[in-house]
Length: 212
Image 1 (cartoon, rainbow, N blue to C red):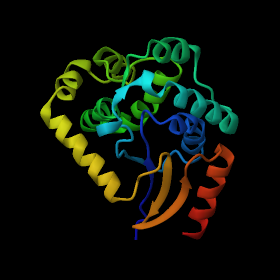
Image 2: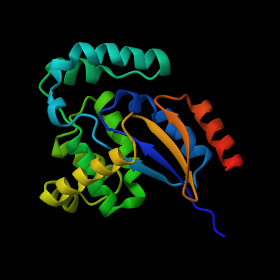
Image 3: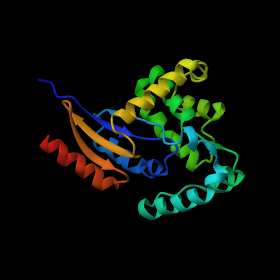
């Protein structure tokens, strides 16, 4: 009987700890290149949480300092002195998550790489993830045709599909980001709920795979 396996990755583009988790995920991909990654995104900043970033400036500065202390991963000057200082960017997980939804439709083999580029664009380059031009640039970097992407991204169908994905991820129990779960033949094995260092995550997956 053929064994099926994949990693379920609970992720949000605006999550600072997901930004810190990028080196961990890179190490996992390098160690287990044939294990598919399935994104689960439930919408960290939606509804009443959506507001201009200036209202959360102090919280974000303190939170990102803790992220750097624990993980060694630091946000860039372009974020602090640009996006955060200006304060007008509307923090909202829905537009970049909608972009993930559309990329999954157009080029499913590129969806993880595209999603991984979003926290870097926000926290290192200081780019607004609700900006169609920014998203188009990131899509083009994955070799995806921009015109059909933008047409789908700005559609009610994409908005509806993204809401459905939010509901699915929450129904699956994804409420903390990052969360990583290894699934093999329908059995779920928790790997990380919150930040985990690269070596520890790789070792945990190896242990689970050996015993699964």
